[in-house]
Image (tube, rainbow, N blue to C red; front, side):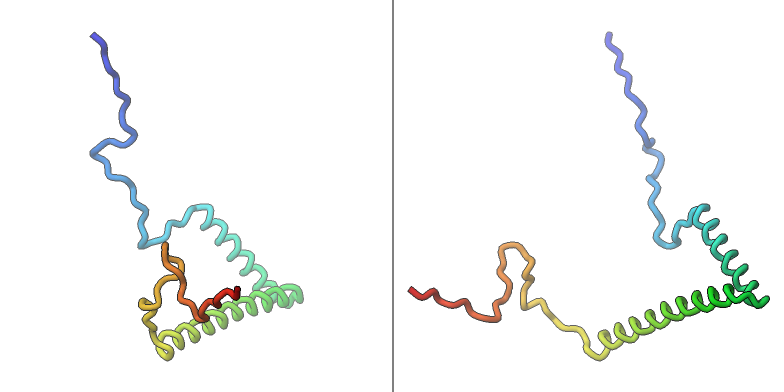
Length: 117
């Protein structure tokens, strides 16, 4: 009588698959250590700038200007987004059709010319 041996399934039926949570981001230990090192370097440079080191003042100023740039860029994006959202409004493009849809030609602005014979 032949015996059939079945290998165990990789996940038992009583276990649920692990679904990645979308509520909180997963942060690895390596990433936390990297951010800690970066924060420590910034703090050390800021302390040296407070003690009067010229290079540290320059680095602190450069980091502050970089942060200010990103803050102003985020503000400009927010201003443009709010303008587009509330002033311009929403347009209904559903009647124009989708030029990327299958078996559908894009709307033509200029009629095609007849060939001269």
